[in-house]
Picture 1: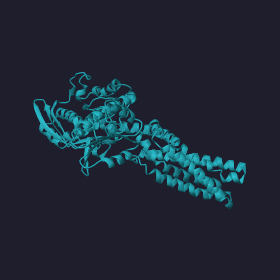
Picture 2: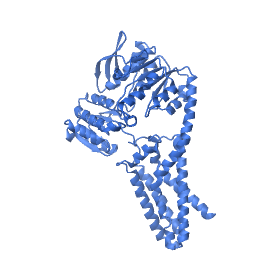
Picture 3: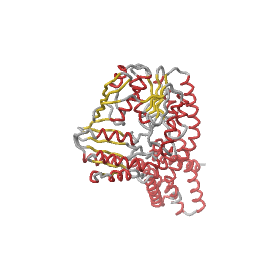
Picture 4: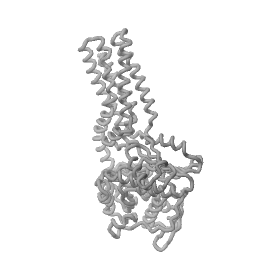
Length: 528
């Protein structure tokens, strides 16, 4: 009984140590949307050394426990094995400390789902650990050799190598419960939403959704009380969380951002929200990795046109794609656009009225986004005066072409931009700066078979913008960016490469000086 208890305690303690050592993997799983395939691609990526570290960790555990056990063999097998547990624990703590120096760029959020996943992961690690300890103990007793007994538990050091598999297994098991739970949660939110008299607005498109949502909220707030899905919450669960949030209660307008990664997503979101009004920003090759073709992207996004909304305002780039209908309108006309690093001025045409406005938002994309939001605001009953007041109050969305200043250096943070349309707009803003300019980018993702072509297009755009320094970050996407940059005559001397963002920032620190402008274009999450 005592021996059984010791094995259970040993398996639980070692499982706790192993799970704490691999908290980063849980963060990566969260970033991957709890999809094992995305997580596994992150783990196998060439520039990701996480699995290499686990392999070195396993090797060190095996050598340290074997050497210490043999050195203390004069105490007897039982005590020698007990003493060898000390370096085991020390190495686990050292691994945790060392691995913590390579923090994830996107902070892990301690959600209920993550905590439940951690609990199941811990259970699986403890169970496998116990089975392995029991098997090795049986082999020790069966062999009977004192020398073999001293090193009998050394094979336990292979545990770090199978931790990613156990995490994926735990994720698959918890996913069964989580998916069922989410369906009930979304269904309850749908019923709750339909029982309210709130005006519902959907925002759909390959790009600009979050920006339009925030612009629309600010403008509509001149007439209505408004609640929107926060940050980039654009899934059924994200919408449901908003419906049950304290901010939802008593509001007159609900703006729901609607994202899609596969066919049927927009229809599902429309069934939940049943929007009275909608904005369709446009389509590009973003997410073509899952949709296959741009036609499929448009087919999915255009489901918003069939949702029964009173009016759907579409981006001007959709004029040749969207059939004219009474429920369809397009963004109002814009002229006299003046873009600068510190703001944008332009004139909006609202029916018979012309409205000259200025905003802190930057770039041609911001002008289009404001025009879309303005057009819908007019459809929803706002006056030109109310619209102008709302535009004046607009503030940049964090990480979406947001201008920051640090020690005289102008920083354009466009870290959340991940499409070629926004990239070109950001480069046009950077070009207005009269001093030295730098671009830091890892390229564009989620473009499937067009990924290489679009990144070559990005490289060409960089060459045309001709910044004084271009730092390409990572390995997987920068080669086509580099090829496109050099193909049209980009200056090779202005091109630099870095494996990680931290390395790029170190290069930048040696180069940058007061008066320079730096564009951070698409800071990829860790799972890319």
